[in-house]
Image 1 (tube, rainbow, N blue to C red):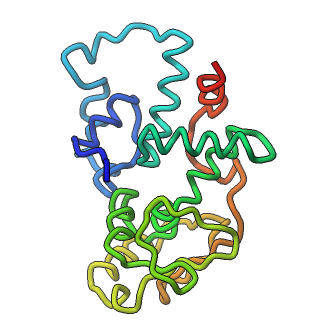
Image 2 (cartoon, one colour):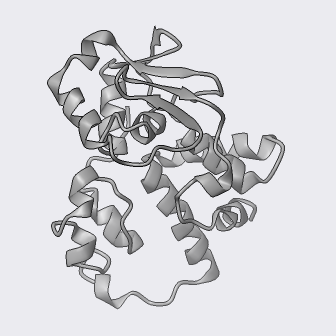
Length: 208
């Protein structure tokens, strides 16, 4: 399975903002964006003004990196979004939010999407009572995502849930931290997605 294996802090620096790819580290003074607020590489501090295409491309790259998906996956999601009723850009974000690894992260069962993705791959979660180890699995309204009983008893998982207990939970999820489960009440509306991206730029890029 293809995946990004280089330093993820470089991705945040390239986009010029925090994408919160390393969990708690992103909230500390060790965050690379806080220490070096310029793009990585030899010419990172001498970037020229972006063209129209460059702005659109950066919006797409930012979304890919935020949700941890590769180019082929992203194109697949865009095709799905165009076939749905409604605004294509919002449909795209809604599909990305409905990935199982994102739901696990949003529910507070992982400190980052990368950690949530790893937990899903290792078989720690079920969807509607059936074990699912595919991070890209798309949940639907009414689905129940839960830790297995064995996983819920692991001290590491207890620590993660405790660390996230004070953080706000998405309105479209009903989380029962004690049981280690989250019910998808509905898929999120655009205003409920706290990802700052101009999704219309992505639509314009793929529409060329």
